[in-house]
Image 1 (cartoon, helix red, strand yellow):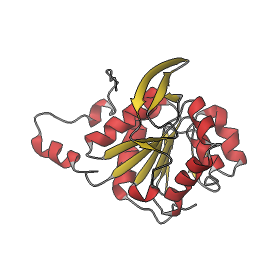
Image 2 (image 1 turned 45 degrees about the horizontal axis):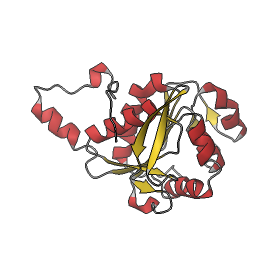
Image 3 (image 1 turned 90 degrees about the vertical axis):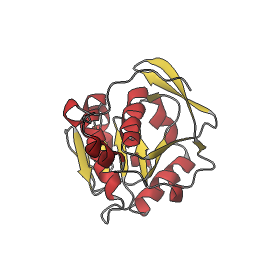
Length: 213
C-alpha cells in the first residue's frame, strides 16, 4: 500500500511532548487492548479514514479495514480518485464479535454502497446490539440510517444529510462533534481534531449501557 504525508490526527495542543517519555508511555497504552473495525467501500474520503486511524494507532489500537472489496479499497480526495488501501478483512469473513469498536468514514460513494449492502448493515447493527462504541463522520451516518439505529440518538453529520437523519428520528445538532452513549459523530474533515479526541475517549471506555440497536 502506498502512503503519503497526512495532516496530524491531533490538534497542536494534543501532540505528544517528545521529551516526556512517561506521558508518551501512558498515551500509547490507552487503546492497547482495543481492536477497531473501519468499515468502508470504494469512494471514502481519504482523510476521514487516515486521520482517525492514525490517531487510534498512536494510542495503541489495532485497526482493520473491513470492506466488501476483498483486496483493496480506493479513496477519494474531494472529487478526485486517490490512493488504494489494502483491505485487512473482507466483509464476508469479518466477525463483529472480534472487534471492540467501529469507525465509519464518509465520502459520497462509500456510504451509498454500504447502505444497500445487507451484510454491511448487519455488521454495523451488531456493534449497537452489543453496546460497543461506534463513530461516523460526514456522510458516514447515512449507513446508520439504513441500519435503523439512529432513532432518538443525538447526532451530527455533514449538513446536506441532516434532514435524512431527522426524518429517521435522530436528534440532529450542528456541532463539531456529538457524543451520545458511545455513538460519536462529526460533520466534516475540519472537525477531525475534535472527532479523533472523542473517539479515543469513547473507544477506551468500551461498552456503553445506552448504546443499543
